[in-house]
Length: 94
Image 1 (cartoon, rainbow, N blue to C red):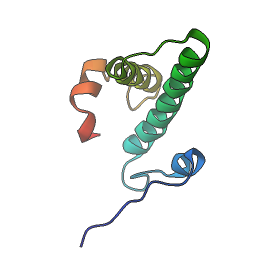
Image 2 (cartoon, rainbow, N blue to C red):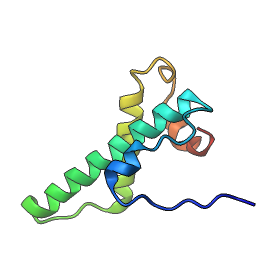
Image 3 (cartoon, rainbow, N blue to C red):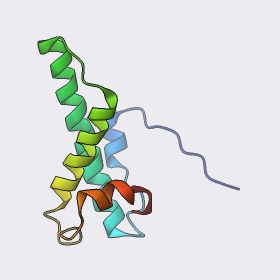
């Protein structure tokens, strides 16, 4: 029987989760950085819509999230050799 996952009630509770933390430190680091990048981009898009009265295309937003993740994890020793193209292509394997 498989497990069922339910979305937490708040962003804080979601951020407290660490998917695969016990299994693989690489996955845990990537998850935490991904959550920060997603929240950062949501914040920027919110401000763009409120203050500039314009929206960014969702495809561009996702590309920028992936770029932020790649840039931010590059400073981590486990990811120092990872290229942006590797991250995008192999995302599910992490």
